[in-house]
Image (cartoon, rainbow, N blue to C red; front, side):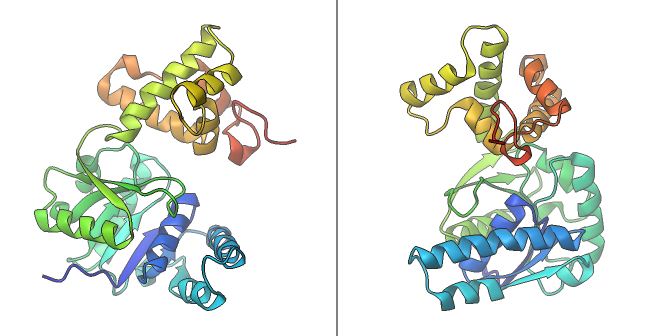
Length: 286
């Protein structure tokens, strides 16, 4: 049985998609990076080039090695062209069920029948997404963490109809990428985000209850729990809109006790999404 992946399509050239594309290319795999607009692809490639230039400057790789990695990545807005001669497609678009469902329905019509479908969703049901296709046995969750190049963990989530061969090939790919795959069965938020959401949401409630200031909570968590970032620093880094989407989804699936705190909802309404917008719980514009 051939477990090798020679070419993979990554759909979505944002922070996660471009990062996953770089991880694949660094491991010697050809990547077709696809998005709906050229400007998104340009932005994603700028992030990839920035990392490669920095790696060369720090002596982590040679100029030749950086160029080889870059040359393994092809950009495209045409979904049909981007999914030719591939063994797997990894979806890394917005964390919205309907958008992902539409994409997988379209991909199911376009891709060869043996192509594995993987989603990088951080919380959405693998079973529900798989039902948008006629290849549920070839559907799996591959949840990379941000930034994909530096974070070792990949949650590998089996749907109820995911075949053992698909699961084994996904584990093999993760190891080839020098990642640590952790298997998880289907559940809202899987492992990390299920735990993380409860932790972060309780932190938000602490400031709403005026138990402590956000700066002091961050300091307490870093020193008391030995976390590299406090909950508010981490939330701003991830993106408050993403945290709200995760929280809403888990609450809808598992009950009111997971409902997002009102301060998070209000910040997202104001467009204060964290580092990417210049302001979230903290202000980054200065």
